[in-house]
Image (tube, rainbow, N blue to C red; front, top):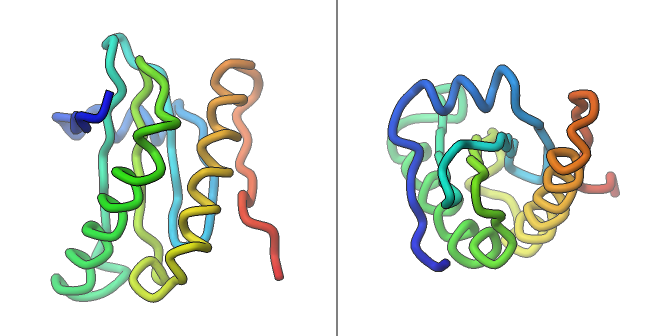
Length: 127
């Protein structure tokens, strides 16, 4: 499925935050939770902590492009993904962000399928 559906309400974002799995990668925080829909959905957020409106919009554009290129092939039906911008989302190297996103998504899928305890992991190895 190449069509990206968005999470329609704040409740979806809050559900991912409160009871979903979380992984950290270069420039991003990724949260995932199973939903009742048959399709996967995505939510993007960038808070005022990362900068002014121009910076937040640039971060959201980068996250949207990452999702189109790297999340679409990996996304599982019935899952909500929330991508949260970090302070270095705008300036981070594209390949580092892409590798980190892919690694984090694979980790989240394992965690969701295992349905074990909720944990946070640093998805990108420190240099």
